[in-house]
Image (cartoon, each protein chain N blue to C red):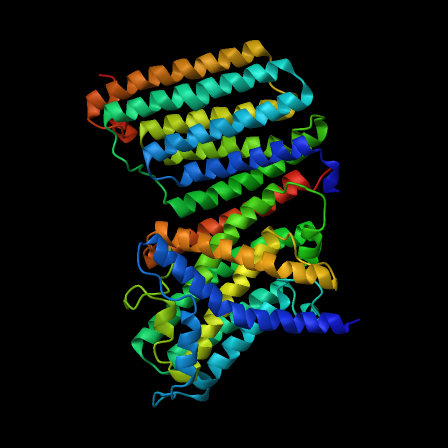
Length: 222
Length: 318
C-alpha cells in the first residue's frame, strides 16, 4: 500500500515531517539565538520540499518560490533577526507563560485537531503533496501557540514568520503554490513587516527598557 | 513448526547475548574514556568484575526477605527472555511467539518492579530512594516505548517483534517519516531505561544523583554479579531492539544458515557503532536534574505520538 506513493512524494512527506519536528523544537526552545537558527533550518527544509515538488511536477514557478524561500527565510530574515538580537542585547532566556511540557502537550492536541481537519480536505486535492496539508495546518497552529505563549516581542515575530512557513507549505501542498504575484506580494509583506517590527523593537525598548510586551498593557490614551 | 536449525539459532542467539552483553558495556566504557581523554579501562573489564563478584561470598542484610534473594534471578531471567525474543541475528526464533512487543515491555516492567521492591526490602533510605526514582522514570518511559511500538506495529500490521523486523527488513525502499520520530523517541527512552547519562549516571557513586546504583547498594557477591550482568543484558537488548527496528538490514530471514553466519559480523559492527554513538551522546551531555527527567521523557512520549499521527496522516492512504 505504501509502495503506491511515488518516491518524490515520500521525500516531500519526510521534509514535511521534519518541518513539523522543527516547529515543535521551536516551541520547546528556551534561547533566542537557537530559536532563530531553528527558524532558518525550517526555512531550508521548506525550500528543499518545494524544490522536490518543482522537480517532480515541472512547475517553473515553484523554482522561483524555492529560490525566494532560500533568499528570504534562510538568509535574509534570520540575518536581520540575528542583528536585532545583538543590537538590542536580548538576554538568552525566552520567558514562556505556560511551562514547556504543558505547551508541548497543548501543541500535540493542536496537531491532532489539524490532522483531523486536514484529512477530508486533502481527499479533494489531486496533487502529489496533498498529504502534507495536515502538517502545514499543524505548523500554522503551533506557530500561533508560540505567539500566544511567549512574552518577548522577538519570539512572537519568529512565531509569525514560522506561521508564514506553514502557510507556504499549505499553498504548495494544496495547489502547487500560489500565483507568482501573490507569492511575491506576501514575501515583500513579510520582509517589510519584519523591518517595521525591528524599528518597533527599538521603540518598545526605549519606552520600557524591555521587550516584554506585558508592559504595553499600561499604555493609555490621555 | 519448530525446526532444529531454528532451535539451534535460538540457543546461539541467547548464548551470544550472554557473552556479548558485558563486552558491549566494556566497549561503551572504553569509548567514553577515549572521548573524555582518560586512560581507557581494559575492554574485558566487565568480565573480570563478573568473575570477581561470582567468587565472593554473599553478605545479606538482617532484614532481607526471600524476595531480596530472588530478585536478581528474576531480573536476570527477564533480561535473558528479552534477549531471546528480540531478533538480533535471525527472525526465525522459536521463542518469539512467547511474547510480542507489548509483552516485551511487560517483561522489562516486571524486572523493574522486582528490582525496585528488592531495593525497598532491606529498608535503607537509599534503596527506597532509588526504587522510587526508578519507578518514576519507568512509568514515564513505558508509555513512550509503547507508542513507539504501536507505530511500528501499524506499519507491520502485527505486534510480534519478529514479524515487524521481517516486514521492515525485506521490502523495497520506502521512506517512513514516522519511523524517524519513533527512532528519536526510542533513543530517548533507551537512555532513560538503561540509566545512561542525561537521566542517570551509570558510573556514579554520588548518592544524590544516582538511580540505578542506589537500588543495588545492598547487593553483594553473586547477587550483584547477576544484577550487573542483567544491566548489561538490558543495554544489549535495547541496542539490538533499536538496531532491529530502525536498521534492520542483514538480519537473516528464516532459517537460512549462510545469512545467519553473515549476520554475525554485521551485528558486531552495528553494535560497535551504536556503542560509540551512545558514548558520544553521554560525553556531550551533562546529567540533568531528576526533576528534568519528566520533561525529557515527556518529549519522548510526544515524539512517539507525533510519529503515530504522522503515520496515520501521511502513510495510511493511497
